[in-house]
Image 1: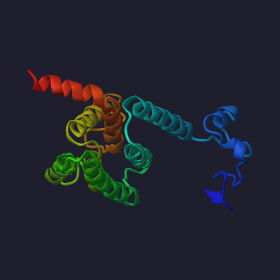
Image 2 (image 1 turned 45 degrees about the horizontal axis):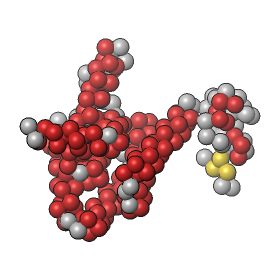
Image 3 (image 1 turned 30 degrees about the horizontal axis):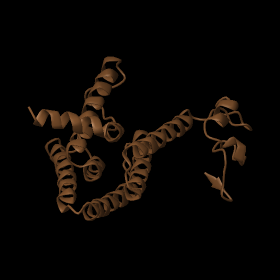
Length: 231
């Protein structure tokens, strides 16, 4: 919540000073509590701040090592922002907000068109386009045969966005990794009796984890795929 452009504590409504908003350090100094009412501040906030910082650090290293263009850099910053927001929102509310996913999909389509133009090879754009449609179509198929029990509309759009952005082998690797992570997490909750087989869990965080892993390990994944094709 905000008041006059400043953050306020949702419990006691006190304005939070700027020095209480320094990522991670303020949470540690205040021992995870509001300075005024002493109510606990959720661990979610420092974890999101830490994860965001690490992702952008890795993003900077990725582009420094591979000398990508500014167009790529700006898009992947946008891509990362969208995925972080969706990750947290779906984890808390089990909803992927249309206000985020629709602009993300539109900009990703613009990006892949520009990518094809800059590379002088329109097939690059077509590969990303087919990947997005294929990923979204596969998730739509799963949603249809399960009558919405396995996947929701938001998952379909997110799969399409990841497919458009990553394209080809990387999008397959991202979604496959997401399925593996989701299966292990779900089985773990069942073993611990935290969930039942019929229980629903948000799937977007696993897809997003797979997308980040595929992007940051893109060179290794592409090399592995190339080695298989040569066999």
